[in-house]
Length: 194
Image (tube, rainbow, N blue to C red):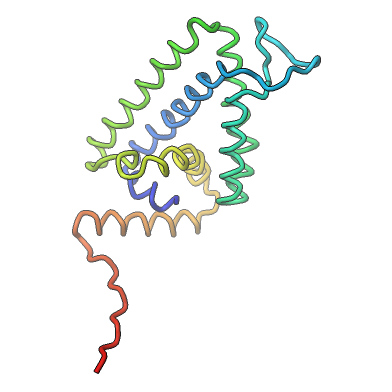
């Protein structure tokens, strides 16, 4: 999955754009899901303006599903994402929703959401000179995009360098094949029947 996503993100400036704006897109989804009803109310809920800081609502369920899927894909990256990235995204969405209020939160989130997508799409066209991964495989992009942004930060810090080198080499090969610079690997020929 990472190879697929990396094959659309080799330009360094585009990677920075993805690192900033992919989590912004995910965060705006979480803000939108703060409107969903919470499953249960605990007497120990911490609240801001009557909205719980942590609640079992759609935002919680989505971030839990992302964490579970990422742990399934790669235990180390998934656990790191679950501890380092997911809680701030979720909590900031909850705090933003509670602080701004129901009437304005979705408007701000929608504006940030549209701006984040626009910047990413333009950067793909200008910097990568190919259509974004989103247009090739929507589901994979929505599932792996946030993990890509997170792993890119870890890779920049030197974490799991050998994995990065393998993924980067495969992604570069995929791009070369897509651009016609290399032929796709040939499939083994079938023996002839006599």
